[in-house]
Image (cartoon, rainbow, N blue to C red; front, side, top):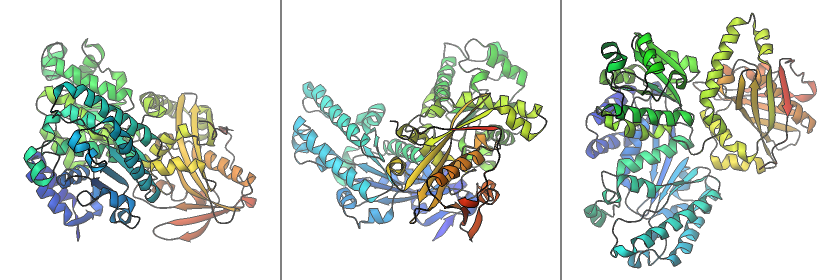
Length: 608
């Protein structure tokens, strides 16, 4: 089999954007099934996805394949046979478990789990057996697979033979879904896809194609398939840390109607009447994203003074200059501007979404900066808000304290950079920051942020091992594993939890290994990693450890840390192309002097 080239990816996606119909997706899916991955030049990664169902769901696969491809992800997908979900989960040697999915989806109807539901409709007596059956499946999956399991909840049908009993039926389904949510929360690595909310939003009558339901056992119609695929993709991106962090926006005819240079601040469309009200609602949706941690930036060809006049003084503007973490308002090419924004925010291009009303600008960005996600954008402003809300790349499974403060954190970076430029040398800069480090073993409340960093950190990441929610949830309870976390604050503000290290005990108690060591890119260059490692090594020595093994696994993005262990005093053990192992004898270890770091320790691992 062969791999797909960047040029073929571009052509395939262009064809789909021209005519996003199911036959076009089907042809794309057939072509992708002939291939076995991305060429090295495509700069992507692979994700193994399994889909289990009690009904025919095969037609959803092209939407998943293409959705992943648009994000430089190669989706390797396992699909179980019709109604074979239970056998695949419960049989240890099944194809599912041999496939080792990173994310597995389970879509089942109540009648596939409990006899009698189909004939009489859902009754209260069915809820207990349904939950028990699903709980057994979830527990069995978790015992045999390290991947995450995403279970769809249940949707009430739009067909009720006795309309007076409709409210009662909906209450039963709500009770069933509440019980499912409760059970799932008790099993690490199990998540709920809110299928009931999804079908309600898009209209339950539009979900199924009655002819296909009877002929092919297909519960989902062509119009609903891409909606469900998009929601599934949102879970894949969130679970594998592949979501986007920053929305980069044009201004004219994107944030407001009209062209500021021609219409002037008073002439742009931004008011309580159509079309101005639609731009206001779009800005409100963007503000909601910014308030939960998604960064906003401006990339516009405009006179800066004209644009700033609107951002600062226009009475109908929802978004002000303070809401944007970076701005490039000039006549420079937008592809160059977005690289400058990425450097300023210390983000990779594959962390960004570019929104522009101009088809020419979008095509240029896709061609020259393919790592940036540049979605097709509606020509009608009335559809802007819905288009933004449908971007699955901006969803998260949970919000951490760092997410909610991300805008504030990036604002303090501006102050630090100004201070650095005023300072004569590096040591004076580091001392002047007045940095405090708090290091402790992770508690349950830290784990969502730990998972986030494990999946999203690339530059300062020694091994880039991507552990599932379930794995990370179990680490603090294991005798052979410790998870250390690092928090940092300085004179300019609190950076929150910025470092993680996973330490594993080897066969001999006197030898431990550093399985993972990673730091948020926004705090690089301040020697925090040296203080973090020093503290961990001193604690391991106090616990009776003699030797510590560190490993470096090279990736396309982590060349920055290639010599980290050598510079810390480790000696090389193995040096191969795929990885290098280093060892340190703690009896001869000399801790580095870091007088500008105030390091404290708090044993919070026992806290809830």
